[in-house]
Image (cartoon, rainbow, N blue to C red):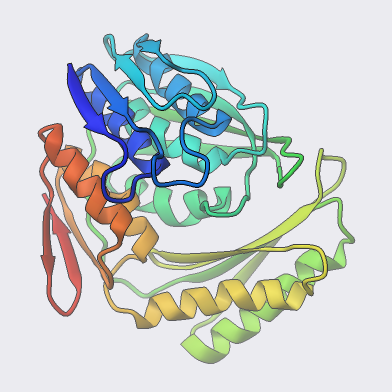
Length: 327
């Protein structure tokens, strides 16, 4: 039984997600101890339990210790198989983070998942970041991924619902092509006045076109009737993205400008991908090879490199003017 200390380096939920995904892909049983030891509320939250169950559904894994606040679990994977599953943390837990654990495993055998929770929540990429920043990189490598946002969900009510379908694929090595950058913004809201999405988008577009000197397309997604109230903006250019969430008392224009400024900072930082995509792509280059660069070696990336190497999937990291990952 392989043992992973969940308090190492980043010491949060990322260690659990990467460890479970790598366990399923490599057919290596794993025990994760001291789970989320470096967080204010250590142990498993409903979101983390849902992520483990999502991966377990792809390989009929046996799981021990999968209870709220548990600090140790054992995950014993079976054979990867095509599966159609549903997971619901029962909270506004991040749907994108649950998908981060499931997607690299599901690509090996194909299948679908319907996930409930939060589509746009704090300390997480938005579902639109997955659609417009992460998945285009994977699709260029040969992945077939379809994301359908059925309902949007925001903290604290949740109520989001996303369905993802993938086909089994042996991806080509991950690469970020040098091409004319395409800049885009998607502005979303649920149960707010219709003008909110337009104001958010206009503010983001104006700042991006002024500071980046490139044309920017906008998409508005205004919804009524969901469980909660909220808004978000996701901005992207090539393989770099940034997000911002609305909140009570924060003008819509400020939300749009926050996302746009985040993208401008990423664009000026150097490298081909943003600092968050850099750690999300590591499991894919570990499995399929490839290379890319970013501007900063984050603690999340350090943690993923360490953990993947422990499972026999080493990734090379070279720091110079930019940070280069390759495998």
